[in-house]
Image 1 (cartoon, helix red, strand yellow):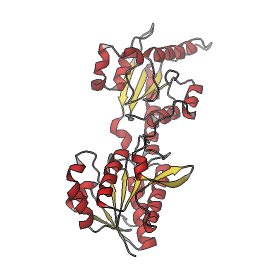
Image 2: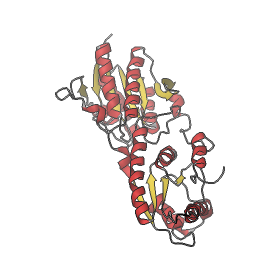
Image 3: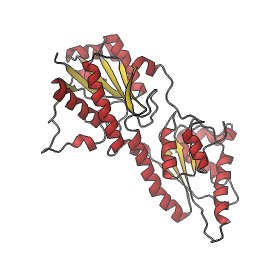
Image 4: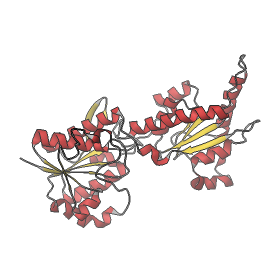
Length: 362
C-alpha cells in the first residue's frame, strides 16, 4: 500500500538533520515507492497546513548531493512557543495534509510534546533522537553530538596555542545544562587540565590546588622550562562551588555565565597571579558540517525509521546501542531520566588517570 509520510525537525538545530531527511526520502521512494513531504518549522507547519514536497532529485545540483555536508535543517525548526495551546489545530493539520505516518527528529523535550500530540490525535509516529547534549534516554548516541565534540576540540586546540604563548589559563564554556557529555568528551580529547560538569561537585580550592601542581611540576624540571598555562572546560550547567554557596559573588553567576564565574574565583587563588581569558562557544557548537560518524548514524536512523513504518511499528524511538539501531517505546523514553554522565564511569576514571581535575570524590 502506497503511503504518504511526513518528516519534521524540532527543537534546537544540529549537524546531521539533513542526513536523516536524505536517507528517509531515498529509502521511502526507492524501496517502497512512497510519497514524502517535509513539515516546515515542526508543529508550526502542521498548524498552518504547510508541506514541502521531497524527492530524490529535489536537492541535487548537477548530480551533487549537498545534504550530506549541510548543517542545520532545510525544513527549519522551532524550540519555543506553547505548542499544546494550539493542539486542536495541530491535530487537525495532520489529517488535513493526509499523512499516513510522521517521522519526528528531536530532543527529549520536543519529542515529549510531539508524543503527547500523537497520543491525542492517534498519529502513526516514529521518533529519532538528536541533541548535541547527548542526554536522550536509552541511546548511546544522538545526532549532532559527535560533530559538536569535534567543534569544541578544534576550539580547544586553537586556544591552547594562544594560552601557551601568553601564559594564560583559558576557560572554555560549552553547552550542557544538565548533562556534561560535551565537556567531558571534548575535554579529554582536547587535552584539558580541568573539566567541570554538572554531575560531579567541585571546589574552587581544588581547581587552584591543581593549577598550582601543574606549575610546580614544571618549575621543578631541570631544563628550566616553565608551564604557566592551562585549559579549563566548563559545562554551562555546573553549579556554584560547594564552598561558595553563601558568597555574595555567586548571585552573579546567572548573569556573567559559569566560565566567567570560574575565572573570577581562580584569578587570585595562589601566590601568583593567574591571567585568565574566557571563551563562550555558544551556538558555534550547533553549526558546521556533520562529521562522518553523525552522517552514518543519521543515515542508519533514517533507513530504520522508514522500515518501522513499513512494518507498522509506531510510537517508537530509535536508539543506538552496542553498534546497532534498536527501538524503545517513546513513552518509556520521555518518562525516563535524561542520560547523564556516570560519576563513577570509565570516562571519569580515564580523566583522573590522565591527571585531569574532574571534581571532588563522590
